[in-house]
Length: 360
Ligand SMILES: Nc1nc2c(ncn2[C@@H]2O[C@H](COP(=O)(O)OP(=O)(O)OP(=O)(O)O)[C@@H](O)[C@H]2O)c(=O)[nH]1
Ligand SMILES: [Mg+2]
Ligand SMILES: [Zn+2]
Image 1 (cartoon, rainbow, N blue to C red):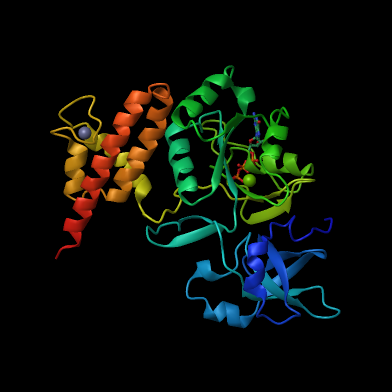
Image 2: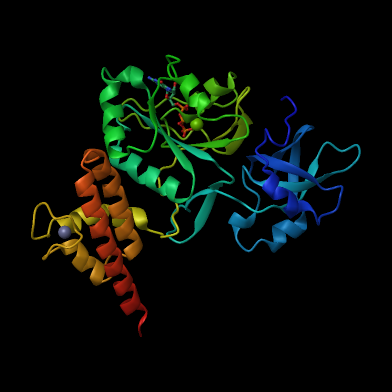
């Protein structure tokens, strides 16, 4: 691996003040691979080193998510004559992708730290699911991370454009690409979304081609890939660890094991489940074309008042719908202004509910 500058590794000058008070011989490094018991780190201008945590870090961590993760910045010490780095300190995290730990609704599992853009990958086979794209995109962007939707395996469908149109209609402000890794189509466009100094993470189910895409971007077969099952196109969970590599003349990219259930963590935990519930609840609204904002007999507003859905989930639902609506009525400035007035009323309403809720 060629020697990278700290800027190419994603270091921001705003971090300089954070390291001022540590010993001079501690060097900054970025965690590139996280194994069960050890790590690989990249030290700017030096290269890759195997690494391990000092006991102090291991024993002072109250929660597994406090330990270094792929993408984290750390301070390391490398002793003369040793080709190994000791992780002395983890530095603060900026934007992270997390999800609910398997089998737990409340435990957060960090997937990758200091991420600028998430590539939401789906395969244009049985894997494609527009609702899942929408939910993932909203959650990624809620964490302050940019999203790029990547529809892979366009070689399997005659009309990839129709899928692109559907995603663009639902998420007008989220860029979306149709590509084929196996036919080498659209790779350059993905690459240009990850310029030098930025960090991307691949997310998506097993078998959608995340590792295949990453190998293609790296111009090297660094990661193993696996076939999908014939009957349902599901992957076999080939990737088992998170690793970060540099794209030649580009940014950094983190591969990720496919998620069985894509349950991205959100500060409003359980949002995904509740968002899904809303259309079900809305079936009971008095009016078929209910906007769930002010109509009499609205089942969604009733559920909100009865605390069956949280105000956060409700606002997220509206945000999602607003994105869709904005697209549909872009030219209709009047309805936009009316909607804004409605939103104002609505927020007043939510604040009132919250106030009542805090009362004993
Ligand atoms: N038809 C087609 N197949 C593809 C394409 N890209 C990848 N594949 C195949 O999809 C299968 C799964 O690819 P992987 O890259 O291992 O998928 P992954 O997302 O990394 O899967 P996990 O590591 O299990 O999460 C492999 O057999 C690839 O050859 C494509 O553009 N078209
Ligand atoms: Mg993989
Ligand atoms: Zn309603």
